Structure formats: structure tokens, C-alpha cells
Length: 140
Image 1 (spheres, rainbow, N blue to C red):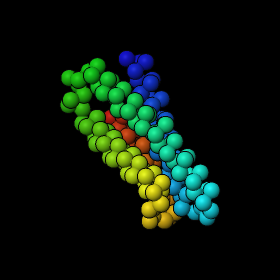
Image 2: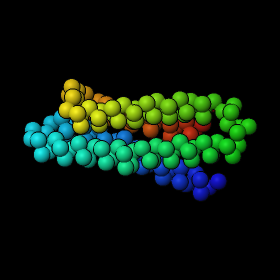
Image 3: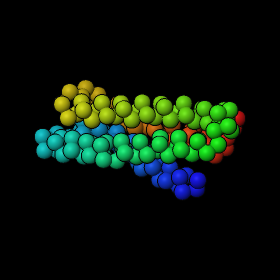
Image 4: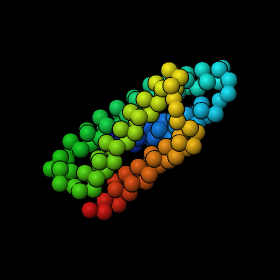
């Protein structure tokens, strides 16, 4: 079980790294003034999303389910876990919204500003704080 937990944490760290960096790339992409830079950002965004964000999200979810399966009788009534999973579902939605922005930038149809993406970039930070507190403190 400890190996599964360790790999779950590694996957979580990789996923959050991608979710922190991808919106920052969007900020830089919006601010880019030349076609070469915009094309480079499209490549970076696509590779980060497909090469790191998606695989680490899948690993995080799969390993999390595996961890829950070790003690389902306890976890099915653990309120802190239900709250944590709610935020994980929100984070999965955020992940997919990032994917939609990757596609919009690639198609040249993004209409959001750098300021929007600077604020958008803060959302996974909030999710991380809440998820870690719920998992470690287990307040209810």
C-alpha cells in the first residue's frame, strides 16, 4: 500500500506542476507579439498537456481509486474523503478547461486576456490547499 501511496503522490505532484505551468504559458502566449513565439507556445502547451498533464491525471485518479479500494468500508463513510473527491472532480474539470484553451490557442481563437489567465492560474492553488488540508487534517 505504501508503494501505491508514494506513486499516487508523485502523480499528484506532476499533475499539479502541469496545472500550475500551463495557464502561465497561456499568459505568455497571449502576450506574444510574433508568429514564431505564438507557434512555439502552441507546441509547448500541447506537449505539456498531452505529455504530462493527461498521463499524470490518469495516474493520480487510478492510484487514488486503488488506495480507496484497500479500505472501502472506512472510506465510504469518511466525510473528509467525500469533500476531497468533490475538489478532485472540480480539478478534473479545470484540467479539461485547460485542454479546451490549448485547442483554442492552437486554432487561433482564444479571446481571453492575460489578466484572465493570471486569475485562472490561481484556481489550482486553492484546490491544492483544500485537498491537502482535507487529506492530512481530516477535519470531519
